[in-house]
Image (tube, rainbow, N blue to C red):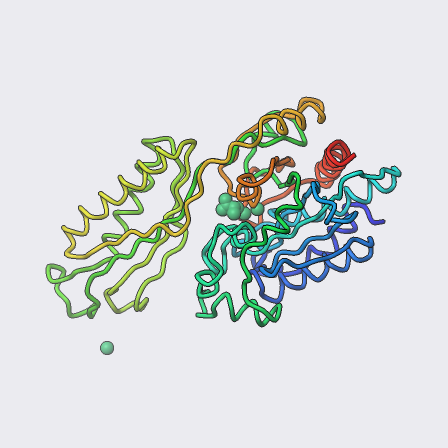
Length: 399
Ligand code: HGY
Ligand code: MN
Ligand code: MN
Ligand code: MN
């Protein structure tokens, strides 16, 4: 079987934008589906039993999953627009190679081992992060999800029918019930491991976080003929709100980002009638997240009164804190020579599954500390160390 570099080289070009070097792997779209097909080929080449859960998530089983109490690993293949190569795929490729390593050692697990590929983890296409794992877990209503639209107005239902021949089928308690625990390997989206001089770490928690949509409404008008005093320009209210998000996050020790904005009609010579923006807020406590969002909303409303505009705030997805199971977390750290235990501000499917099964995460060092960018990187040696660590963990849990 191939080593890390060979397997990685097979997927590196898939969905990569020549201009930016970033990845455009959107759920149920051609590049991500090509990667998913590659994974299914790899799984079948290993005689793993493959199944799809009706929501676009795929599972590859070593052993009979109906035996239950499976040790599941895996991650996602989709990316943010122009995202990095490792966020998601590293967990999937490492899982395949960890199975190879166990087989080469002649390990015969007593519990089934599964590899999961979850759909739409980033929420880049349909706006809801961890959509696949939330559908599997019954945390999202499939009918509501089916109606979610992408930026071209294509619904999730249409996208899934085109790619898979069916729309989202929703909760699969039967499949979830077969999982005894879940361990996700992921590239670190920060530089803690670099500073700690360790290749692999173990997650302690995922910060509470969420996405809020802000709609600023004013009055569209002519850029050249409308007096400044007569304007009701939502761009001004939007701009003040973005600055307030930055200021409040710094004040409260949180992270707040506005990375996506839509302007209507989005013309150089037209005062906008409407500006929609998405606030991503995260912090080490739910209270702090709520304080940031409330403070930003208050500021937006005050500025709207000055600008003669209106603002609405809609929570799109809110994730509570994930405290990874202490026993499993400490067991993995000990198993991996005292691997450092660290929190993350990034959301993961592991956060969704942790509400149902004992869950843990392994992080692999990323010397750039950068993620959700083409600059994201993990050296092959560290990726190999991640595979070795994952194999050690799977053997410990499944044998
Ligand atoms: O946005 C996140 O935290 C994750 O990368 N989906
Ligand atoms: Mn990500
Ligand atoms: Mn990810
Ligand atoms: Mn004109």
